[in-house]
Amino acid sequence: MTRLNLPEPLEQYFTAANNGDMETVGACFTPDARVRDEGRWIQGREALTKWAHESREKYNFTASPRSVELSSESQPVVTAEVTGNFPGSPLDLRYHFAIDKGAISALVIQQ
Image (cartoon, rainbow, N blue to C red; front, top):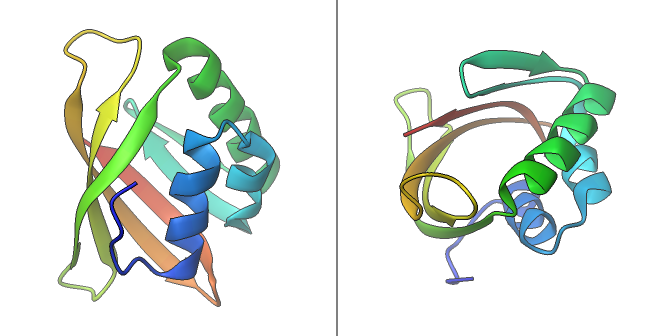
């Protein structure tokens, strides 16, 4: 993974996801965090851990962060090259994060 100056929960998120450690991915989120991916919202740490496992099984993906910037709300937006078992691989996806008290409280993944 390219070394960017990512906040700790984001570094953990991408490292765990790329290593297939979906339990750690789930632990990166606050208990009531929300994720929007593929047009649907998933909420709560347990549901997010399940989503992470399902995504890994379905796509066998890796996400390589290429850049990080701050949104207008001063929250990190990471652009990552994502490769896996899906049409158009690899794709650049934008991960819009919200961080609260050292954990991810929201994530929106967009193409």
